[in-house]
Length: 298
Image 1 (tube, rainbow, N blue to C red):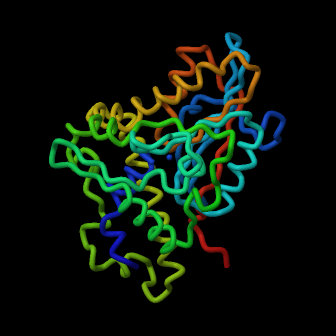
Image 2: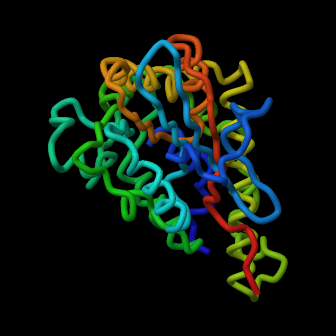
């Protein structure tokens, strides 16, 4: 395994957060008490979730899709099928203020994250470097990168902050806050090959690391949403950016359209809460979508 895994935690968390319709479908799960849960693992898979919401106060139906940006190709193909039923889709991508956010290059997701963000504090974030590590991470674990399979189309609307405004939002945050807790994978960085139960079996080791990272992504993203200690992180990385999406979406609520939002999975609880509280939306259906297999089939 490459050295990228020694740096994966804060990169991965930032990647998941920053850069996380099936009305009559028999696979649609029943709405229950855990309908705001947005990410999970079980014995076989790492999952993210999609929801269908409707409101008696508006004409539009909303498809809310939480994603991880590195996953198996089939995951992105399944999401693409869901989104094809949407007339308009709002998506994430931090972009420089100097660029036209509606340009073809930005709209097609060719490199919406490849700019360095400088803040007035000591915290600097190189989005291009993060993208490189995402790609390396995907290659190492036989996964795919989102925009290599799921490219924004003409009806996709870039709905995110500028790199300049994002820098202002995070200028008071520290590396420690963005990193959450120390990544166990960094405790013995030179022993990454020994993490698997059989270091001689590279396939087995990859799936072992897939599971460890999936578990940590689940724990860390839930921590940001549920632990008051990370309120500033949640505001900077999630809530401010969600506000941009909802402001753009608001002008379409009475169009009898199906509107899609595709964003990092950890943005979902805030989206759900605000859609429910501000416009009376209620979840009418939800589905867990397998992102990574955690077991190698024999």
